[in-house]
Length: 405
Ligand SMILES: *Cc1c(COP(=O)(O)O)cnc(C)c1O
Image (cartoon, rainbow, N blue to C red; front, side):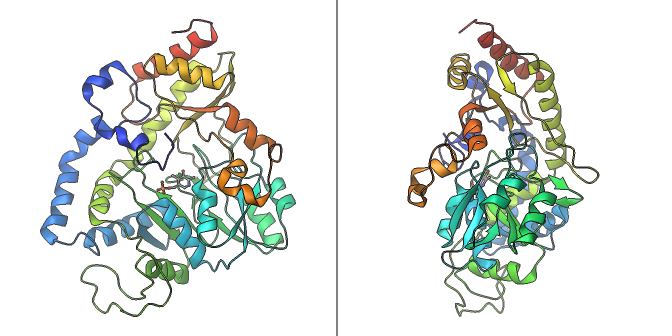
């Protein structure tokens, strides 16, 4: 099960408590969902009372709160992180055939969004510590067709935006960010997604701020980008698209999509936003507990290392990703102990069948390929207990100590 797959991690929300006593799912929010339910219920009731399930008030309210949280001048709520990327690329003026430099290791939507917007993905190798696009590799991958760079911030920390922005400036490239995983991450005081022309957020259920279904947003400081994304999410109609849509234009300025966020998802996200910061703190505690328990285990090749980017920079443990010897056997061993894991990302992007026509081959991006072969994510979510962290670490330890099952 991969992220973005509707049958994926988010499907576990309603996992029965009976199962949870016996197993440690890769992702679950049963306990926090129960705790938050009164707040969510009140918000969702407002949607029913108002009678507007689309174009309603909750979406506009959520946009305001996300702008306040991230510091973005504009936040445009949409139906997924993937559509947010496509609309952002289009609103920033991507023309057919334009090259967009993207990391060779990321969720597939980082690159498929480029194709969907009419561009051409140009892959770049990653930094093996941050798993994000590496500035030196970026410089070497630029061609005359390149017009944009779109690094992704993965798992727990941001790409080196200072280094990447400098290379982009040297080549006259526009900077966009796949900050789908980046809520709460900041560098030099600037939130993920706001280091260039714009970025995105994903609220897929297993993300740090998860909806009860699919949802996403575009973040930008540029009014023209925000205006175009707002139009494109609603069939390309410019004008007001919220509440009673007074004054909405019925003229279609651009061939748009229907990518609006549902009001019920906005209501859920408004409720969940109230505990985002405490969730992020809990995630950091759990990550620290993993680090203490795993650092001396020989078969583990790499634990997360957060690079210090100085004042105004912060990381968020969305995923606890380790690199391990005999990764697939470890995954099988943990599964037999009832412990869920997820392989991020099992195939580097340049080797995905959907990009075969661009002529990349194995060996082109060694760091991306090594990460794909060795990386596995352990359970990490606010509901997880320290006892469960102990159980996971004990199971990992037993595997490398030659105690299978
Ligand atoms: C989750 C994710 C996306 C896609 O977001 P959806 O809301 O699932 O469409 C894109 N890029 C990255 C890096 C992601 O992690």
